[in-house]
Structure formats: C-alpha cells, structure tokens
Image (cartoon, rainbow, N blue to C red; front, side, top):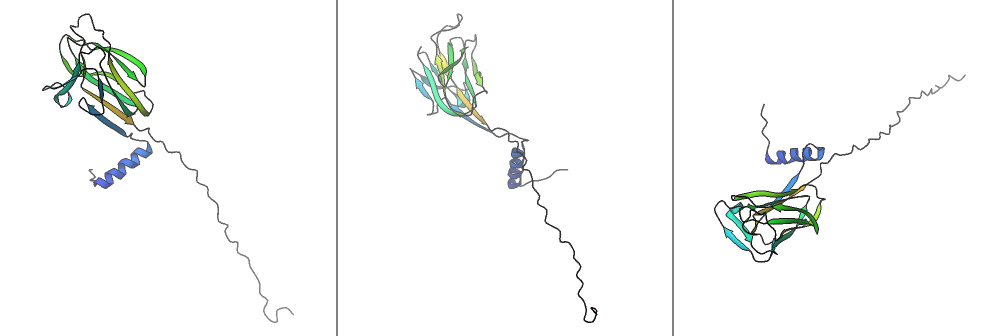
Length: 188
C-alpha cells in the first residue's frame, strides 16, 4: 500500500521522527577552494581544470610556508585534495592543536582525494588549518600542497524525549446521601 503525503505532511512526519529519536538531523556545508571564507597564506595559484576537483577548480602552492585556514561551526570536518608525484606532506591543525601529518605523494595524479576526516569534534566553532611542512616523501619531486574543498557537518544529537510523568488527581465522586423529609402528620 502506498500513501501519498503532501510536503507539509512529510515535514510534520519527519519532525515527529526526529524528536522521537528515529532519525538524526545532519547539516552539511561545502567550501570550494575558491570560497572567500578560506584564508590562504603564502603564494597560491587557483586554477580551473576539467576533472581536477569539485567545480573543476583546485588551488595549489609551492610555498614551503603555505597554509589555508578557516573557521567553521560543527562537529565533523573533511578535507579533499589532490595527490600526485610532486606533492608534499601537509599537517592538519584544529583549534591550534596538531592533529596529524598526511603524505600526499602518489606516482599518478589522484583528484578529489579525501585526505583527512574527523568526526570526533565537539559541537562549536572550530579553527581549521592545513599547512605545508616543507617536507616530502623521498619519491616526490616537489613540495606542492593542494586544496580542493572542505566539508563540515553538524550532526544534531538524536533526541530521546523523557516521558513526563502524568499525575492524575481523582475528582471526588459525590456520595449519595438519603434525606428523609418528614411529611406533616408523620411525626405524631
């Protein structure tokens, strides 16, 4: 049996499921490498290449002090980049804390590569930074770092409503009371 719901009914249905704890709300935003939100330090080149990355754009830097950073609100972050024969090793920093180093060397070009993912952040405003380390894999021919795009998410916690205890105050039931009204002459 198929049930057709209007948009308003679907929204109501999903809202009920969300608050009943059956589904989880996820908000996601993608920052393409050309976004004004990303701050680039060092010398960067922003290029358009078919198939190169999200929206066919990618940013790269040969500067050994290059970095890209931005603030985001959420509890989950992803960094997509390009791997290649001339790529360097980059570092990921979140809120001023070193997270890890990532070797982006590959013998062939790999576009739209998910280089870093962290789904264990507290829900708040974070400062994310990817830095060129001026180090490379011995097989790499250069020190290039790339930025394709970032994705950050906010996973709303699943709501499990606490049942409110229902207190019933019984209404007193009237008790029937019999009154005998004497009739005139019955009290003799």
